[in-house]
Image (tube, rainbow, N blue to C red; front, side, top):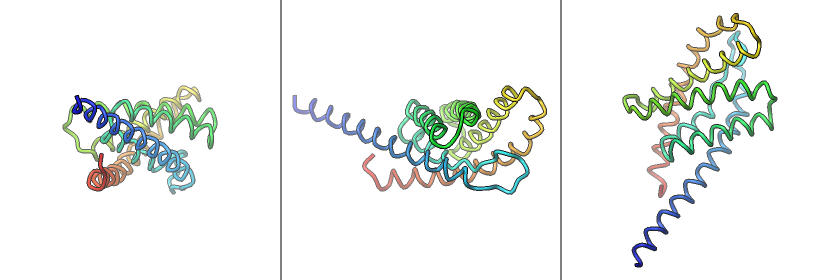
Amino acid sequence: MSWILLSNSKKNSKKVKNIALCGVLTTLAMIFSYIDSLISIPIPVPGVRIGISNIAIITVLYMVGIKEAVIVNVLRITLTSILFGNITSFWFSIAGGILSIVVMILLKKIDIFSMIGVSVAGGVSHNIGQIIAAVLLMETNAIFYYLPVLLITGTVTGVVIGIVAAMVLRRLKLHSIW
């Protein structure tokens, strides 16, 4: 009987740790989103961002799980838009964020891409989602001309974010009790 209680205690402890980790990473993702908005990239395309909040999203995806990564991503987008943005920024972010997380989940599940590959696909698909939102909101196809630049920047930033996320995940696994 005591082993059942111990087993449940360990499950509850892991659940509490995962909730705490998701809370911390949601907060970090929001802070990273805000910092990202302050960084000016010298490219003549509006809205290009590094995407450093994806470090937190990818960490949750690989360390905690799919459902939690979706929740953290939607929370980050919603809260950041409320605190620092507007309804337009929300629509652009949610379109990119949902497409990005779906693509990253699918690629992680098929398990043939590294975390860096998943990150690159997430960055590129985020940009594609934002372009689709822009075309729908602004009712013009001319926005598709931004796509080549956004695909390049999404690839480059996706590599950097994937490398950093892999380092964060490695550190968390080495130095924690998760």
